[in-house]
Image (cartoon, rainbow, N blue to C red; front, side, top):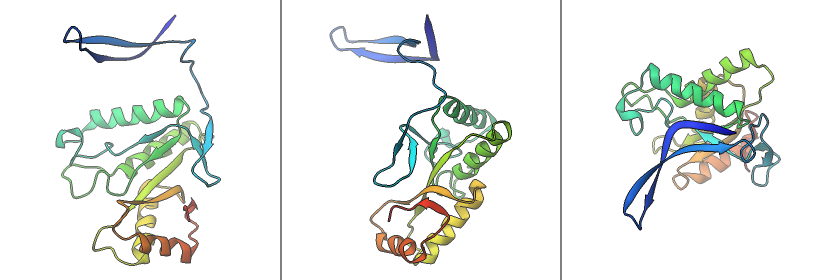
Length: 197
């Protein structure tokens, strides 16, 4: 029995015939069994356990790079369906950032806001679901000092509607790594479970 993976087609280029073949994506239930709980692994050297596969939410709500400069209800439903399908499939590790779906982009909705909304709605129907969230601090030139990191984290938590995140990362490492390292080392900040330092 075949299990239809999706309605999309995989395009394969055959160099011998110089043609593009359209192959419908299918998988055998024997090869790709349906799972409800993904095996978790330790993230790096920490004790944090996450699913082997994580979902990046950069495109959710973004209009500056993704989504043809527009965000509408159809795309919102598609993002929510992707979130729910991921959780249904056992993938519960999501990565976002404060700058995904930036307020500086016309018509954008912040990715953290959408992810937080999806988590909240999912928990209403399934209170036992555990979702691990990773988000990032954007070390922009005008955000100097460790207080900038802490303020940004609190703002991210507000958008996500969470009291903490599993992983808080420095976006674009190289700008101000010392500021971020110092912020976490000196504050032993409790809004993250694992901060990597």
